[in-house]
Length: 241
Image 1 (cartoon, rainbow, N blue to C red):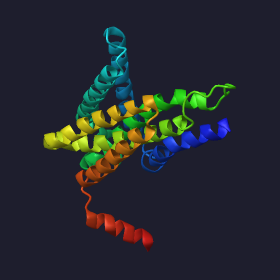
Image 2: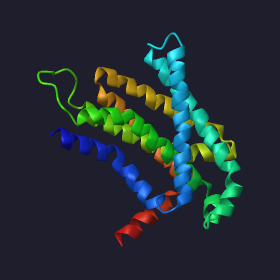
Image 3: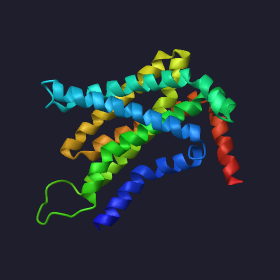
C-alpha cells in the first residue's frame, strides 16, 4: 500500500511537469541549460533564506521564514530574468533556432519558470515521499491520511504557478507593467500563506484558494503570451477535428 501511495503522489506532483519537460524542453539543449540555471537560482534563494532562518532570533515563527523565502524567490526570479536578457546575444550564436528563442521571449520565461517550479516542488516533496514509501509505525494514529495526497497536490500547484508566474513576470518587467509584477509577488505571498492552514490539517482551506489563484494566473499568462479567447476556441475546434 505504501508503494502505491508513493507512486501515486509522485506522479500526481511531477507527472504534468515531466510531460511539459518532455514535449517542450527535452529536445532542445539550450532550453535544458536554461532550466538547470533557473533551478540553480532558486536553490540560491533557498540557501539564503535558510541562513536567515538560523540567524534571526524569531526563527520559531513560521510566517517569518515564509515571507522572506517568498521575497527572496522573487528577487532571484528577477536576477535570472536579467541574466537571460544579457545572454540573448550569446544564444543567437550557439543555437540553430535562435530566432525563435530570442523573438518569442515567452519561451525563455516559460522554461525558466518550469525550472523554478520543478526544483521547488522537489524540495517540498522529496522528504514527504521518502516517508510515504514506509515502513509504517504500528499503533501510531496521529495525523491525517490525506497528508501525502495534499502535499503532492500542493507541490503540483506551486510548480505550475512558478511556471506561469515567470511568464507574467518577465513580460511585466519588459513592459514595465508594475500591476502584473504586483500580481506575481502578491499571489505568490498569498498562496504561500494559505499553506499555513496545513499545520492544522485544514487542507481544503489551503488547496482551494491556491488552485483558484493558479487558474487565474494561467489565464493571465495566456493573455500575456498573446493568447485570446478566439485563438483558444480555435485550438479546441482543431482538436475536435
